[in-house]
Image 1 (cartoon, rainbow, N blue to C red):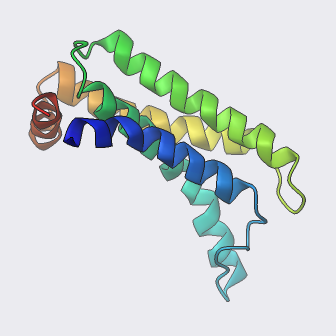
Image 2 (image 1 turned 135 degrees about the horizontal axis):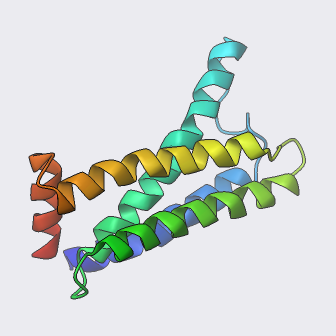
Length: 139
């Protein structure tokens, strides 16, 4: 059962991203300090697609397919492509914007997270992350 939860999570999360991108940026929450509100929302690009990448990595660790550098790269590419898709989608939503810098932030978040997964999975670094990945393999 646990493995199916991890396999479905990336797609549920993609649905959440799509849904939230369909509303104006202030529809869910808007802080009284507008500069802080903007900073937090812009920072979310780094985090949002890094989480999507991680969910794909976790899902792949629940399959019988050995996790390899190619699979890791594929997870990163899929997360980045969805970031681009999300920006295109936002360009059609009134009161939203789509910019190249947002795509750069999306890719940067994925790249940073990918670095840590690569080191944990293939270079015997970050033992707690590696232990969690092994735990997923047993799902």
